[in-house]
Every structure is written in structure tokens, then in C-alpha cells.
Amino acid sequence: MNFPGSSLAGVALFLFAAITSPAQDLAGQYREKTQQLIQAAMTDEEAWDRLQYLCDRIGHRLAGSEGLRRAVEWSEQEMRRAGLENVRAQPVKVPVWVRGKESAELLEPVRRPLFMLGLGGSVGTPRKGIEAEVIPVSSYDELAKLGESGVRGKIVLYNVPFTTYGRTVTYRSSGASRAAQLGAVAVLVRSVTPRSLQTPHTGALSYAGGISRIPAAAVTLEDATLMQRLHDSGSKVRVRLRMEAKSLPDADSANVMGEIRGREVPEEVVVLGGHLDSWDVGQGAHDDGAGCIASLQAVILMKKLGFTPRRTVRVVFWTNEENGLRGGRAYRDELGDAVGNHVAAIEMDAGAERPVGFGVGLPAGFRDPSAAQQALARIREIARLLEPIGASEVNIGGGGADISPLMAAGVPGLGLRTVGEHYFDWHHTHADTLDKVNPEEFRKTIAAMAVMTYILADMPERLLPARTGVK
Ligand SMILES: [Zn+2]
Image 1 (cartoon, rainbow, N blue to C red):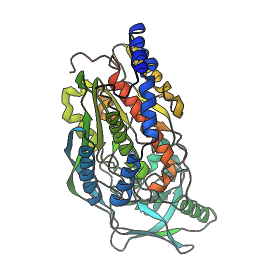
Image 2 (image 1 turned 45 degrees about the horizontal axis):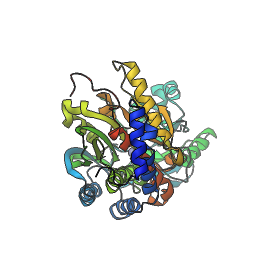
Image 3 (image 1 turned 90 degrees about the vertical axis):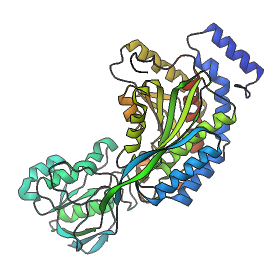
Image 4 (image 1 turned 45 degrees about the vertical axis):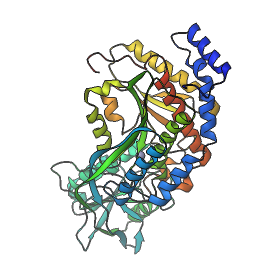
């Protein structure tokens, strides 16, 4: 029953490999099953239909929204319909931020509307808006040089070109408080993106404690550079910003999950998934509808092929990654000490472009460094099986936001990596819609997730030995 999809030759090969190389010959043991999983993924139609439903019929899914509520309900139904075991919605309280109406207008030296999106978590402006002079800066150093005398009463524009997401996003997340500290009345942040077609990119900000909270909005690359040029050519630039944004009391939401119970050590779990919530614009197609649906389909394909791994495989759609990470934290908290039974956690949250492999985060200070080396070698060996779809690279460093609480508790974390050619062009915009997902590339992500998950859950030895005292 466990291997109905295998040919006799495959079973023989499996036994031969297991006998001749009891330690590991993962490539040999799993070549045939890998081929079956890849073939199933590359001919799959169901996942696309599900992603289409999620994007087109439910749409965007910010924490606390009707969209997320419907998505939770639908996801649970889909997991049940697919015949997964132990399907449930784990209740999670999530923050609620409501954008409301918003606009920004350039008043001087020319008059025209600006393309903008308020940043998630921002406070609103007074009803009549905030009207002030704009002072552009290209770094925090430049802001510091202006000092309070150059900033007080003004709107700071962070016109910072995209280098990497990690380096550039600090202006979105911390820029408001840094400017408020010097007396700014609002901030505009050049969208965190390498390219733009007048697309503003939202995303979360976080206010520092003890500093007044000022409104913050993203503007487009085009509008940021326009204001910079106007300023550099000697004009006073004035803008009116209007935002109704506000935060409301926490709302009910849930992490949705389902499993294939392991056949030998069901208490040991390989978890995979993405986040079901999105920003309140676009469809959350790449971020992260695709990650959820690809993860789900990876598990469904194992089931269809009759592959029941030694350990339990659990797919989770985490809630509230974008503006709170409450889902990822609640999942880890519920486990308590049983987190030690999580063998690996795999997240797909970098879009559904062509996958190239996985980034791996192993627990720091693991008692036995040779065990960590061996774990990495095993992951590389599994990834080599993904050569046919070009997804065999393994890099050190990786994981994902939702699985970060698990990783902090010592669980090895993997994040699916892609070519990443356009992800940040669409990320957190009105343009993160289904048409940006290439069905063929999406299928490859399903294949990569399925193969990595299945083998980690089925291979004879667990990826890292259990830590004593954590069970
Ligand atoms: Zn995401």
C-alpha cells in the first residue's frame, strides 16, 4: 500500500540501495519516486484551479478582512475535500489595520496627483490632510545631517534606490519614527522595488516606542525621483497627504492545516507551507497565494501517488505574516516542547517564479557540528534529484518568516528559492495578480516542494538527531 506507484524495478532498486548503503544513498533510494512526483506536478491542473479561485474569487486577504475570513474557510474545505487527515483551523487573534481613503497631491511647484499607498500600520492624517514642504533624503545619514532644524515641520521623502530588499526595506519599516524623532510631520517612502510602472508598494512599518506616530505612505519610483528633481533644481516642493488609516481591535483568524500521518514515526513532523494573508491590494498571487497552494498540492500529489512517508507531513497556511506574524508564533507556541519533534520546516514565500533550489537555515550552536554538516549534505543530495527541473542549488541561509519561530527553537528551516527576476516588481502592489504567475514555473515549485518534503519525511534517519530534553 505504501508504494503502489513504484514499478517492481523501482522497489528492487530501493531495496538494493538500502542494503548496500544503509547510511544514505538518498539519490538512489528516491530517484524513481522523485520522477513520479515531478511528473505528477508538471501535469497537474488542480493547483492552478485552486490558485485561480483564491485570487479571482476571494482576492486579497489582509488580516481582519472579509477576504481572509473567506480564505480560511475555503482552505479548510479544500484540505478536507482533498482527503488530508487532521484538518483543522487553529484560532489566532490578528491585528486589524484599515486603509480607508487616501491620497497624496503635489501642490508646488507643479500640481498633480501622486500615486501612493499608505504603509500598513500607519496612523491617518487629520481629515483635511497634512500639507507641508517635502525634504528628500537618500539615507539615514543624510537625514541625520539635516538635523532637527532641517526636518521639523516637513514631510521627509526617503528617495532610496533599491539595492537588496533587506537593505532597502529599513526605510519603509523604520523611516517614520526616525523622521518623527527630528520633528517631521509625515514621511513618503520610495517604493521598495527595483522597477516600476507607477506602482506604489505597501508593506508594514513599525513605530518605535516613545516617539510620536506620524503618517507614512509609499510613493512610486517615478514620483519620488520627480520630487527629487524638482527639489534639486531649486524649487520648494509641497505635498498634501490625506489618509484615513486606522487600527481596530484584534480580530479572529486561524492557521489552517492538514496532514498525511506518518506510517512509522507519526509524532515526527515535516511542516511546509506559506502564508494565507496578503496585503489589501492586488490578489496576493505571488505573495503568498502561490506558496500556500503549491505546498498544499505537494502534499495532495504524495497522497494521490500513494506515498505515505515514515514521518508526518503537515501543510500549514499561516495567518497574518504580513503585519504581525501572529500565525507563525501561535503555531510554534501551541507545540510547546513538542517542537523538538519537528524534523524540518519548509516555507515557500518568495513567489512562484522558476525555482532554483533551497536556502537552508540550520540551528546555530548545534551540539554536534558534524551532524549539521551531515544534514546539509543530505539536503544537497535530495536537491540534486531536482536537477531535471533546475532546482538543485542549496545555499546556506534561508527559511521564512512564518517558520522563523520554529527555527529559533532549533528546527532546521528551508525556503524555496527562485530566480527572483520579478518578485519585487509586484510585491505588495495592485499588480500582484494571477496573470504574473507562469503556470509552468508554478508547477515546478510544486515539484520542488513535494520532492524535498517527501524525502525529508521518509528518509530512514531524521535530518538532525533529536535534541535531548526536547521531545
Ligand atoms: Zn509573503
